Amino acid sequence: MTRVAAIDCGTNSIRLLVADANPQTGELTELDRRMTIVRLGQGVDRTGRLAPEALERTFAACREFAGVIKEYGAERIRFVATSASRDAENRGEFVRGVVEILGVEPEVISGDQEAEFSFTGATKELAGRADLTKPYLVVDLGGGSTEFVVGDDHVRAARSVDIGCVRMTERHLVVDGEVTDPPTQGQIAAIRADVEAALDLVEQTVPVAEAHTLVGLAGSVTTVAAIALGLQEYDWEAIHHARISVERVREITHELLAATHEQRAAIPVMHPGRVDVISAGALVLLCIMERTGAREVVVSEHDILDGIAWYAAQDD
Image (cartoon, rainbow, N blue to C red):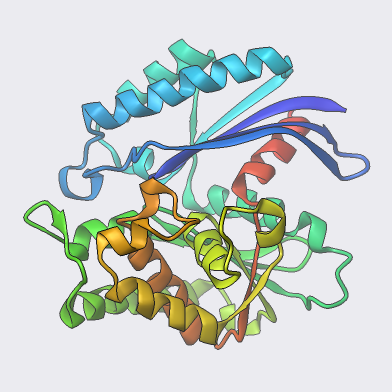
């Protein structure tokens, strides 16, 4: 067993997984998993730069994670940074801060690498499930981008497109610095148009129509699942591998789009950092399901973070 620490720094959140990994048996024993909303991608779509306050929120979370990693004595650390830090002109400032705090340089990975890690994390434990037919379409719906991966035991094709929940919110739902509550039909149509255009690009290289099982990852998907299950508090075990129908996703999306900030915030399972971006996230998920003809989404709590841990364990 190798004790590893995996960090996934995305556009909206930063997450840590400390686990004992055994690549020979395929076991990943979780010791600590935590998430902080840092909104690193705040304003990046508009300015092209990481905001000072966003960097400080991220560095504060890194300092917390450094203490956890030291406590567990992880042998290997792998820090992966995704969409927001790929796009930013001042990403060097981000890299220097992470190295100073954690002693490891963040890997600002490509969308294709991100997709590979996500696929591994999401599907490694599904191999023995007779009720889920291959090939899988894994959709990792992030803050700045969404990754689409089709594969069986290995990735067959993947593509990353810029239709994350934060990016869609900032691009279409923010007016004069405030999120529109509720959004207009025109704003909703604009998000749908962006998603449809992105899916046109995806279908050029990823055979999404060949997939038999849709696997959905990340906070927008798990939050929709928690609402669909009627949970009064977030329950990882109930959400992991839940199967949510497209009809239920459609109902929840319409309810979220019609709600005010206060109404969304009052949903028991709603993380405060997702209140303003969940409507766009749910709409992106719905558009994907409608376009691909998926009758349900299999929700996975194992995602890119678990994939990063597996690859950390295999590092020479």
